[in-house]
Every structure is written in structure tokens, then in C-alpha cells.
Image (tube, rainbow, N blue to C red):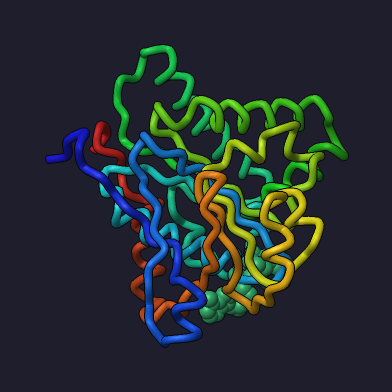
Length: 258
Ligand SMILES: Nc1ncnc2c1ncn2[C@@H]1O[C@H](COP(=O)(O)OP(=O)(O)OP(=O)(O)O)[C@@H](O)[C@H]1O
Ligand SMILES: [Mg+2]
């Protein structure tokens, strides 16, 4: 039985320096309880390991929040998510926007009081920037509506237990209206240093971070806008189990419907 006092943690990865210098695995974890902002922005150039980390997060989130409901938008239709394609809350390419609609509707129902449940609802959106750029090229009004829904989730979601995990290569201002990057409690940049990304996401720390070098699955994470950590995403030992957990998480029925 869960109470309001239960605290759930999610391990994002390990402390990179402790790993490299002492061969020790020291977890970098975040508090998932609604008191904390756990909206997450995960960036990095192609091949830096974003989707890999994202999948590990999905699996761990499903264990940390057994009453949670996770929606997964895979805009690119990435081969690394092939095993998720038949899951009821997996959405690909243009359908990705249906995942956003579903989660946004849940937010509004909770906000209006129609839905009094507060089990955690999470939308993980891979290649969010590409989805918005595509929309902007075709239908600016619709693109603005999509960004508006994301903004509402970011602004209202924490206390209503609705979370957004945004994954993209470069979070350009086009898809991130003024100030919206500040609404992410967890900001992670993986892989090779890209000055413009650091300037956008870690302005207070860019000098310090720019002197470092990161490989695939390595990078920097900023927690609640103030705590900077260097992170390593360990290779998953049992990838079959991870895939099973992810598939189960995107298929299981939420408690009120079960
Ligand atoms: N921490 C890691 N340990 C082991 N392998 C990894 C790790 N991170 C990524 N990889 C591998 O590196 C490759 C690229 O990773 P991934 O697809 O996650 O990159 P990405 O940042 O999502 O790239 P893109 O932007 O092109 O989608 C994949 O084959 C993945 O399995
Ligand atoms: Mg990817």
C-alpha cells in the first residue's frame, strides 16, 4: 500500500569520475515524488546514447512506479524500439502526437477535478525536436498547439503527477518557447561537447563543462537547476530483461482500469 510518505528514486546512471578514477559505481538518482520536478530533458548529438539511456530509464521507471502509466512516442521509429511496436502505449512517427494528446487530456481531467487519481503518468518523447520542426514546416498553428500542450504539462504536471521526458539532439528555441527549458528539473547532455547546447542548457556551468571530454553514454546532468554531476550510463547487463520490462510497462493497464 502506497502512502504520501513513500519516496521513489530513479537511478539515471553512475558518477563518471568515481567510475573512471576508482572503478566504483556510485549511483546518480533522482527523487520521483511530486514534491520534486522530475520533468527531464535529454540531449546530445546523434549516437551519443540518448535512446539507450531513455530505454534504461523506461525500464527503471516501471519498477520504481508500479502504479505508473507510461506513454512512449518514438517519432523516428527507431530500430532499437522494434520490440515495443505492439504495445498499447507505443506511438510512432505522426502518431506520436496522439501520445501527447492522451497525456495532455489526462492532465486536464486531473486539473478540472474530474479525475482525482494521482498515479504517475509519464510521456517519453524521442526526437521531440524533429517532430516539432516537421509540424512547423507544414502547419504552424498545429505546431503552436503541440508546444502549448507540452508547456502546460511542464507547468502544471508536477503536482498532478504528470511528467514529460523530452529527448532530442539540440533543443533549439524554435521548439522550446521562451523559458520552457527552465521547466525541466533534470537536464542531461550526453556525448561530445557542443558549445551551443551547453550555452542553452547549462549557461552557468558552461566554462567548467567545456573543459571535459565525454564519450558515448557519458555526459553531464543538472539537477533542479543547481547541482551539476558528471554521469556515465552503464551498459545494460541483461538487455532481454530490460526489453521485457519496457514492453510490459507500455502494455500494463493502469490501476483504475485493471
Ligand atoms: N551506455 C551505453 N553502453 C553501451 N552501448 C551504448 C550506450 N549508449 C549507447 N550505446 C550504443 O550506441 C549506439 C548509439 O546509441 P543511441 O541510439 O542511444 O544514440 P542516440 O543518441 O539516440 O542517437 P540518435 O540521435 O541518432 O537517435 C547504439 O548502438 C547503442 O546501443
Ligand atoms: Mg536516438
